[in-house]
Length: 161
Image (cartoon, rainbow, N blue to C red; front, top):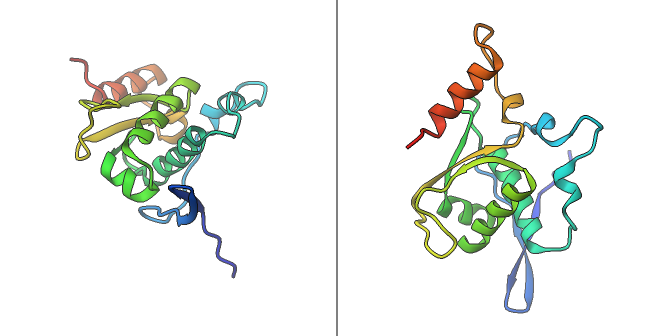
C-alpha cells in the first residue's frame, strides 16, 4: 500500500523547508458538505480565495486540523493556541489572522476566543470553534425541532453573559 503524507512548508529566513502535517489522532475528518455548498452547488467560501496568500493556506490547514480533532460527542471543537502551534507550525499571530479570515468568508460559524486577541494571547487558553455546517455533522434527537435543538446546543457551548 502507498502511504500519503500531508506536507507543509516552513519558512526560516529565506529558506523554505518541508514540515510534516501532524494530526492529533491521524483519523479521517467528516467535512460539513451542507455548510460549504449552497443550493446551486457552488462553494462560496472558496470563491473568495485567490490561493496565493499564506493566510489562505494557514486557514485551510487550520480548518482541516479542527475537523480532524473534533470529537464525535461534541458539537464544538475546543483546542489551545499552543496545541495548534505545535501541530501546524504556525505562529500565534498567524493563527489569529487565519481565524479572522475563516470567519470573514464563512468557514467558521462561531468562535469563542475569550481573552485572546492578535496582540495579546494566552497560549494555554482553550478556544471554542463551531465550523460552518455544524448542524449536518451532528445527530439530532427526533423529539426536538431543528430550531429547539440548535438553540439548545448553542446555549450550551456559548452561554450568554
